[in-house]
Amino acid sequence: MKIKTKTLSYDEVMKLPRPAHKKPMRPDPLLRAAARAAGAGDLKDVNFTYRTERMDELGEGPYLILMNHSSFIDLEIAAHIFRREPYCIVCTSDGFVGKEGLMRRIGCIPTNKFVTDVSLIADMRCALSERKCSVLLYPEASYSFDGRATPLPRRLGVMIKRLGVPVVGVLTEGAFARDPLYNCLQKRKVNVSATVRGLLAQWEVREKPVADLDAALDEMFSFDNFAWQERNHIEITEPFRADGLHRILYKCARCGAEGETEGKGTRFVCRHCGKEYELDTLGRLRALSGETEFPHIPDWYAWERAEVRRELESGTYRLDTEVDIGMLVDFKAIYMVGSGRLVHDLSGFTLTGCDGKLHFERPANQTYSLYADYYWYELGDVICIGDTDAQYYCFPRGNVPVAKARLATEELYKLVRHTRRTPEAEKL
Image 1 (cartoon, helix red, strand yellow):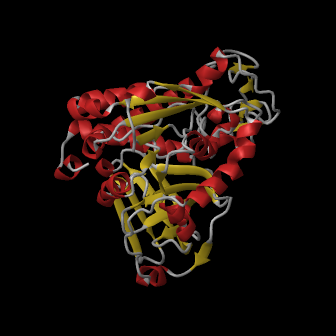
Image 2 (cartoon, helix red, strand yellow; image 1 turned 120 degrees about the horizontal axis):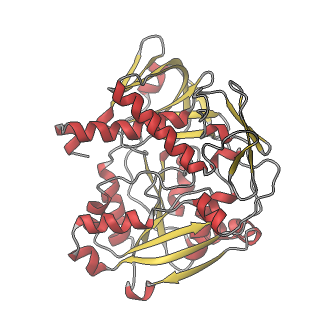
Image 3 (tube, helix red, strand yellow; image 1 turned 90 degrees about the vertical axis):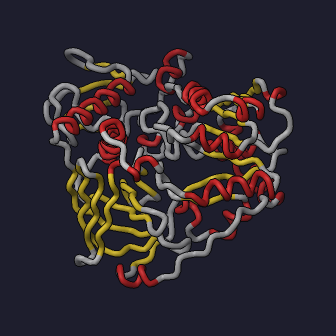
């Protein structure tokens, strides 16, 4: 999948008019049917099935539907499960580029990831109360990197309180194993299923404290797809199953070198020290010689997180890289405005470039996670920062692990929030 790009100067982009805010539309029934038909082949290929739990306790909708996010098939799954239930979808703004009219008619609500957007709640309320539609939200906001849940916004329970409608949870199994983000968009032969559960009845939303609502969400988003694969003996025999594994396992667990690992075929190797592993058909790593430091891939990723945390606490963490810069200011194109430098340190992100005309800062206490992606729209690995006025898509030059930047963002946010409470932080 590609996205429309256009080369303009930074000055030209800043002069472009920003799009006026539009209320969400009730989805067009014919387009919904077309979307279901388009996804039917994928669902047939994965022998998709689903089961329901506690839905009879929720009563009639509209609902807030919360779903985990593993791959593109999530959208096709939702279209099938809720085929009789009109719903709007909260989606990233870049999904509207070049097709705003179509996306709005499908019922999509644009928002910028990991940016406080006060209009989003109003749009969701409009969809629920005025359009009489359920709202589908992927609270993780990004695909899972390591098969476990990404951090949820801590004020999600407050949002649920404000919306005041029953909450449905959808948890998929097999979607990540079939098409993990790191594996270069190569699909594996894996069956996919889902559980649709009445998570919170309206009386629970109304009467339970926010802490209890957040606890219910934390329980739902506590999955581990690699553990699920091993526990259920799901054999993935494709010869490319380790391709791209270095995108999440960027640091060698034996020698500590960064940017020297490579996943290719069924093997994972560190070019610096020569340590080599086999990724078996159940998703476990096995060293071909010596100790296997982390057979379970999420454990390796958790170790990398701890290593990043250690760098932050010691004050040694710093990302400093040249980048090519794309900007999103409307829904017509991603505007390629030139090159610059992206720095991430204990104060947050700083982006400069475009012959000194661009200077953007994003403080650490305003970003609980990071929009980072692999081979984004076939353009390259990306780190995205921004605000409600503009989004900056930074494509690092050279071997820069965007996964580390995401881990650092998440851990730095925890440190900042724990050590000091600022007026800006209190608004999040």
